[in-house]
Length: 50
Image 1 (cartoon, rainbow, N blue to C red):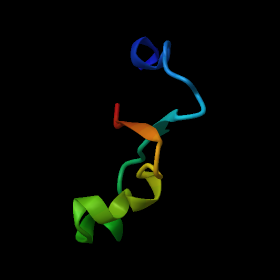
Image 2 (spheres, rainbow, N blue to C red):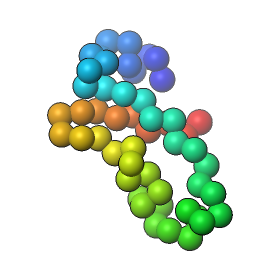
Image 3 (cartoon, one colour):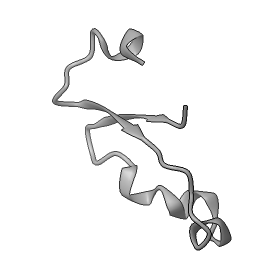
Image 4 (spheres, rainbow, N blue to C red):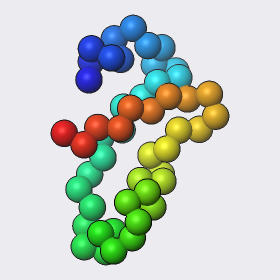
């Protein structure tokens, strides 16, 4: 991931390490589990599930 973030400004870019969904979250839509990690206006977020 550092290959991508190396040259980006940390004020506008962040990496969100996404956890494995628990039993309750698996019953929701995939999108709903990660709403809290989505970017705000003018922000870039790289989602990492590795």
